[in-house]
Image (cartoon, rainbow, N blue to C red; front, side, top):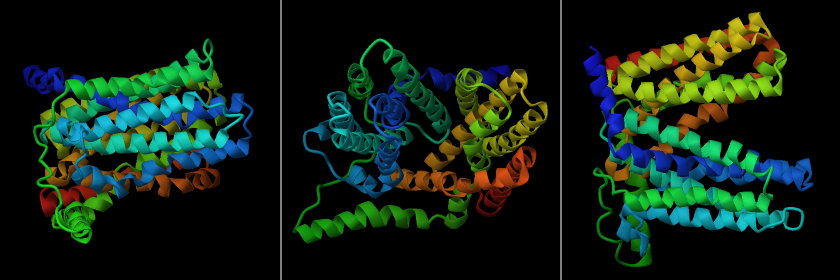
Length: 424
């Protein structure tokens, strides 16, 4: 038995995993540079709260990256295309990312706040474009059985990138100016560029085919047909596609609905900021990474469907730990257990879920289909979870987490239906 589990874990020693760490890092580090870390820089520069709030708008391209994913999927980039379709777009976006971040490092927010906003927006455009290319690279680099392990290590790199632009940036800001900090942060893009140059084009990547020819109208028509219409039509030809999309929207609803209320809940239980930071960053981060890696082994051993069942059940059960926390009140040891178990289950379920979404993509249209499907995945988080505060206020913390636990059931039931009706 142990031998079989060890064989399932051997995928983590594949050289592709080192590539996933570097690419995950490159994908993960830009976000805080245009959100939390940037907000602190603006605050210390004397920028008003209203303007800091407006900076949230620069992140909107992350939610709409599917709009230009067909371009990344089908259009060849002059000069960069010699690296390959995925690596070429990734390197181009990383070069743009490096330029935008270095540009931010040269701006004084107090004197040119709108220029800084534009450069932050450009950083998000580059980051979102990079995500399109890197998600496609990750999906195409592994077969279905290996997807979860590749996803787990990519997420590990993503977390390390977040630490680099979050905690590490804040520590650097105690000894360096913010301009110097952002100049150092540009090294995150360099790590991605070096990783791309040292990697190979994914084995499952299909070439774009001949460049579009004919008049401008004919080329636009061909682009629409092959880059936009064909990927959507290909997915809609899948049996049970409507139920698949619904499943993608609700499988993680339990976790997504709860997340906005966790910090207010910790505060209501009387925990200090230092306690919350220590437990969520140390125990939470370690459990998330461990859960992701364990999830990859389980998917490799049991397959995606069984792993989805396990992840769905565990994410519901571990939410009940917050009910125990509500009754325990200000008990730091219960908080450690609650956060650790919840993040462990979350890491496992996320790995299995991303592996499932990746398996749905046709390698002929990977970038477009993954961008569209991942948008549906975030829809529940961004829209449905917006009512979580009103519910928590109306029913109280214990009842809120019990109701949230029950939100795991529809996803599991729909998984049963998909397995029996469509043999997923």
